[in-house]
Structure formats: C-alpha cells, structure tokens
Amino acid sequence: MTPPSPPFRRLLIANRGEIALRVMATAREMGIETVAVFSEVDRNALHARRADRAICVGPASPSESYLVPEKILEAARATECDALHPGYGFLSENADFSDACAAAGITFVGPSASAIKTMGDKVEARRAALAAGVPLVPGDDRSIDDPAELAAKAEEIGYPVMLKAAAGGGGKGIRIVNEEGELASAYQLARNEAEASFGDGRVYLEKFVTRPRHVEIQIMADKHGKVVHYGERECSVQRRHQKLVEESPCVALTPELRAQMGDAACALASAVGYVGAGTVEFLYSEGEFYFLEMNTRLQVEHPITEMCYGVDLVREQLRVAAGHPASHASEPQGHAIEIRVNAEDPDTFFPSLGTITRLAVPGGPGVRLDASLFVGQEITPYYDSMLGKLIVYAADRERAIERARRCVREFRIVGVSTSLPVALRVFESEEFREGDYDTGILERIDRSVPESTLEVAGLAAAVAKFHRSETFSAPASEGRGHGVTPWVLVDRVARLGGRR
Image (cartoon, rainbow, N blue to C red; front, side, top):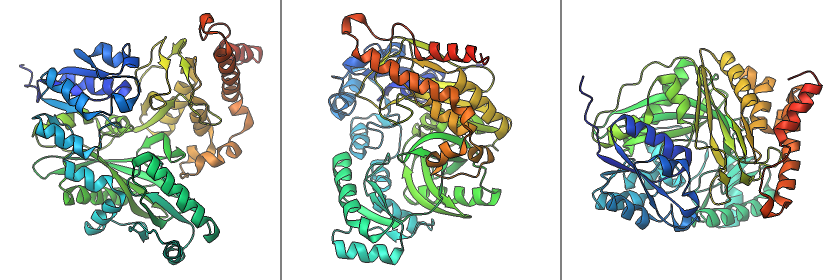
C-alpha cells in the first residue's frame, strides 16, 4: 500500500526539549523532514541531534534565541520550510509571530493571530465566553485602577476573591484575597508581577471558587468550521498554580456534565473562528463548571488524552493546518495519568541545577516517557524546570495509580533534585486515591499521608539536598556528581531495613 502524501515537505520546530522531540517523532512518521533550532547551550541537546537539520539561533538566553521571531523565521526561510510548529511556551501564543509566518508564506501550525489575541487576553476571553453562552465565574472583567471602586466591587462579589493578570498565564499575576484588609497590597503585588511577566499590568477581579477542581477540555477545530473535543483532563494537583499531576478522565464528572463541558468548549472555539488544537479550561465545584481560560496551543498534558482516545494530537494538528478535516473523536477507553518531572527541590520547589550523572527510566506495558533526558545533560537556569513527562495508562484508575506509583519509584535521576517524591506523596494519599480532591490537595498532603509511606521518598529528597550542596561546593576541576549518590544511600538504607 502506498503511504499517503505528507501534508508538508519540511517542518521547522520552533522549540526545544521534550516537546520538540514529540513533534519530530510524529512528523517523521508522516514523511515530513524536520528542522530544529537550538541555542548555543543546547548544541548537544537531543532535539538538535535528532532532527534532519539543526540551526543555531543565538546565545543561551531565550530572549536572544528561542524568543526572537526574526531568527526563527530566518532559520525557516534558510532551510526552505513550508510549515512551522511552535510547540508550547516560547512563541506558541504570539499573535504577531503567527502573522509573520503567514506573511512569509510559512504555515503556522496553530490558530490565527486574531484568535490568539482574543483568547490570550483573559478579559477578552471572558467576554467571548459570555457571548458564546459559556458559564463564567462571577467577577468584573474590567481592569479597575481606583482602589475605592476595587474594594466596592470585591464586596459586591463577596470574599474570597481572586486578582488575575489580564494577559496572564502559568500562575503569574494571581493573588487570592480573603478579606478587605488584604486587597490593596495584593492588588499592587499582582499588578507588579503582571507587568514584570507580561509587560501588561492590567488586573481583573473574580470570585474565588472554594474547593475547585481544574478540569480542561481538549478541542480540535479545522478550517471548514468543524470542532470536535477529545474529552477532559483533571489538572487539580498543582503548586503555585502550576500543574504537577494530571489524569484523564476526571472521576468527578458524570456523562451529562462531560457532554455539557465539551459542548461549551466547542461553542467557544466556533465563536472565535478557532483553528487547530486548543484547550478550554474550567473550574468545577459542586456540580457546576465555570470558564477559566483558553490555551491556544498544544498542552503539556496532551499525552493522557492521546492514551485514552487513541489519537495522535500532533498528527491532527498537522493535518488540520494543511486543510484536512478534523478526525471524529472516538469513545475514551481506560485511564491515564501524567507526572511532570521537574528539576526542583521537592520541599521548596526551587529550581535545581546541575549535571545528570545517572539515569534509570521505568518501562513496561502502558508506560510512556516524553523526555529529552540523557546522562551528561546539564540542567541550566535558562529554561523551564520541566525535564519531561511520565505517562501511564491502564484499564481503570486503580490500576493506573498503582502503575504510576511503581514507575515513580523506579525512575531515578542523579545529579539534580526532582519533583518525583512529591508525585509519590500524591499517589500514596487517601484523598487522591479516593478521587475526592481539589486544587488545594498539595497543601493538605503531608497531613493525609501515613509517615511510613513517605520514608523512602523523604530520605531521597533529604539526601539529594545534601548531595547537591556538596556537589556545588566542590572545585570545578573535580567535576560534578561523583562519589556517593543520593539513590546509592537510599538503597543502602532500604537494604538495611529489609526493603530492597
């Protein structure tokens, strides 16, 4: 049988790390040549080595390399690419970049600039959702500068309230206010953070939903007006408004609620003329759901949708960008969980820097690892702390949790601390296992987990912290990561206790 013609001849992937490798894998299966871009510090990164061609676009700092539209477009023109996939982060939600690609005759694998602008602005997104009949959290979508008016509106909405950056994302520019006395200082802090993070200090006000669950719908919209959704993902395990563990489906939703949420997400996408992959995020509480925001790109947690729906979302993105109709969504099967593996101290969540000296990854049925990890890889301060994503799939939620626990225990990264011990705490907690949790679960986790179940994970974190301080205090000529590693010490203690 003759394979189908690829939708594009050559694709530039305007990103790095695991998402660049993820896009590259599907592109190659479709017969599309791939071009990677890399910064000087990423010269030996896997995405730069694995692509058909690779172009250096500048120094380590993203502001001088990955975030410079002119350099990315020049790389695409120089290699005669007819399409560009932005991944997520960096330029993926930059409306001007989407326009610039179109002007250069290069297909941007994502929505139009107008859709990015509308849905990327939280205030405009709320207005679009309201016009589309999507339920909203009570609030005021205006940017209020007068302190007296702000206090009056907060009183009208009712405490607790949430201040949110209009141009925000990633948990930046958000403050929860429990009473009037906290409002003025929280407002100033939110404005300052929004200005520093997005160059836009506008902040708006909405009701803070108590014990909310963060549930999002994956949509795909084509150029013919068709919008389909691939169910929901539960993303309530968060720290500092950033996700750590995600699962699909959400155990709290009934089939009726799932259908209502999906219809609302599709209606919103249709209303703004959306094309491509997108995620409509909702807050869910006590049988009601409210629009939160829309991400106009592929999400980090897209693999759990792929596992449950048997769909390749990157393939769908490329097909839709080339003008093909979106594929019909099948019925979901089984249960999937994703664990973000971040180079972070598991106690403080501060970034952990260093060189990976040992690596052992889990495997077996229903296990997928999206990562660009390798021994000798240097974890630098220039980029996001996420090293990769561990995804597990099983026939039901209980077995998926057990598989996730097993994989986290087997996953060993030496040279930097990671967030894996925190994920283990989540899987050991009764609250998570019962499925009755919300976005505050990590704040309660230490009280809900029996001390014995945390012993090994806690020891690993403590020893890693000690090891890291010793490593970084050694002279550069002595290298990093030599001698007794954290997991060697943990194994010795485990053997002494009869728990090999």
